[in-house]
Length: 109
Image 1 (cartoon, one colour):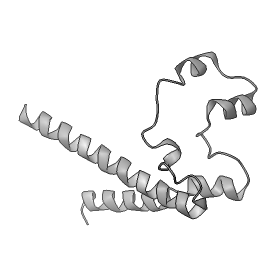
Image 2 (cartoon, rainbow, N blue to C red):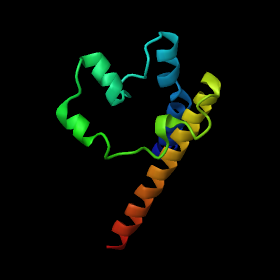
Image 3 (cartoon, rainbow, N blue to C red):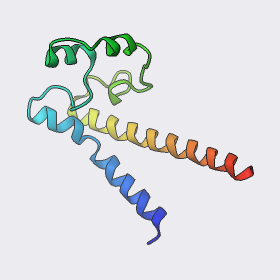
């Protein structure tokens, strides 16, 4: 089995496992997935909002906020798990296409 095939198999496994970040906090009643806190959650956890974080918070708006599509918020854990998987596929395909495009541009030089 070549390296490329191993890479795609590994990515497929990660795609299937991506809802774990959603399921474990739900199972343990931990709130948001670890590291995916918003400003309000950080303030609740730490007691304050770091000045630079507050200043930079509005710069980035995710194309697929919370890994769910518009209208999928009330679909329950199963629906959100599917949204996580679709979001992972979209992210990996987008990254792969960008990397291939950059590779083609660099190969021409």
